[in-house]
Amino acid sequence: MTHYGGPAVAAIEEQMAAVNIHGEPVGELGWDELPDEKDIPINEDNYSRIRLRLDKPPQPSTCYVFLGDGKENCTFSGAFAQLRRSSRGIFSTDISVEIEEEEEEEQVEQVEQVEQEEQEEQEQDDWPKRLRIDATKMGENRGEFLLKLYPNQEKPSRIVLWFQCPWTAYGQDNQELFLRDIMAAAAKVQNPGELLLIGLCVDTFLFHLASYVKRYGSPKAAAEANGYKCMGADQEFVGEMRSRGYEHRASTDRKLGLERNDQFATLLFQRKKPDPHPTQG
Ligand SMILES: C[S@@+](CC[C@H](N)C(=O)[O-])C[C@H]1O[C@@H](n2cnc3c(N)ncnc32)[C@H](O)[C@@H]1O
Image 1 (cartoon, rainbow, N blue to C red):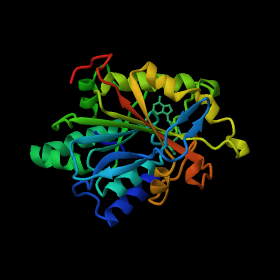
Image 2 (cartoon, rainbow, N blue to C red; image 1 turned 90 degrees about the vertical axis):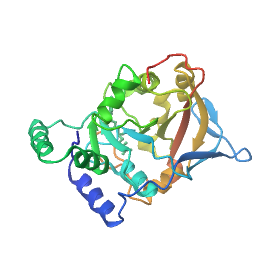
Image 3 (tube, helix red, strand yellow; image 1 turned 135 degrees about the vertical axis):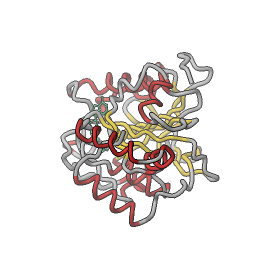
Image 4 (cartoon, rainbow, N blue to C red; image 1 turned 45 degrees about the vertical axis):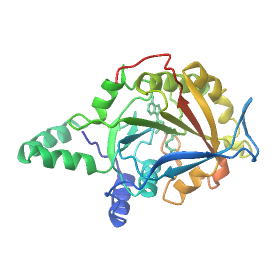
């Protein structure tokens, strides 16, 4: 089921059509450790510095689910699809995505007019795949979550979850709890070895941002408590996204004017083995 957002979504569609990104993915996410470079301090922890990259050869059986990707603006997942030169397997989700009944009915009618194979092809390539997903309640198990993403198609073998700049409407002081809830929900649907990325605005110099990062407490401790190992933090990858159209927005969809890569850190967590909370595959 595909749900379209507002104007920014249309702009990304155009951008993507222009560079023909509906082909096979050029690679999958990997990372390099940078042991000789300085750690990144975030609140009370130090994160070893890593550099995210796309691996070759491609492993197209991975899906990338961007959580909290924006109300109308989904430029982060759009930029990632540009980098990967394919939107295949990429989902842009947010709790604010509206489910439009009329659109659903229209889709059912259309489905009746096309062959099953054509329908599957269309659903695979349709961009953006906008879904309403609550990052704190993704599903009771892996199977339930994958069914939301791929109701009719073959399911991918790996799930990458990525929340760029989580911020909850629970209340300003509850970001730490929010992060824990996201990680607990992720642990229900991910298998050992799978990746969870959390992008944070870590700028403590800009007055209006100064207190943001402190509200998350210790993401590392939250990850440990939920069965994830912290692999490090990247302070360059957001630059790759920014150069491909990513514009950070607040929960209200307002632009915050963040212009530098080092104002962000992308924290990389990996689901630990053995899995302390077994889920069904
Ligand atoms: C600070 S904005 C970041 C938006 C976008 N990722 C970016 O970097 O520009 C936080 C986003 O999280 C979404 N959000 C808040 N609570 C959520 C939840 N429980 N599940 C999924 N998304 C949520 C909001 O709707 C909003 O789009």
